[in-house]
Image (cartoon, rainbow, N blue to C red):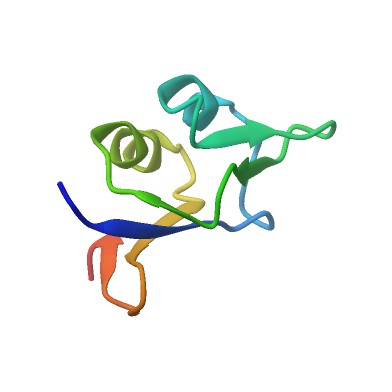
Length: 76
C-alpha cells in the first residue's frame, strides 16, 4: 500500500470484543479492562489493520492518512 496511517480507537465506544487484536495482533492490544489500544499511533498501511477496523462491531477504530485528516476508514 505504501502509505502510513494514523490509528485511533475511541475507547468510549470500544466494547472489548477483541476482534481487532485477533485480526491485527501487531496493531492492537487489549488492556486489563479489555479496552483496545493501537500498538503505535502511526503504522504502515496494511490489509490487517483495515480488516481490524472493518470487523469492529461498534466501529470504534478510525484510520486516517498520516499527516492529514483524510479518512481511510470509516470512509466519509
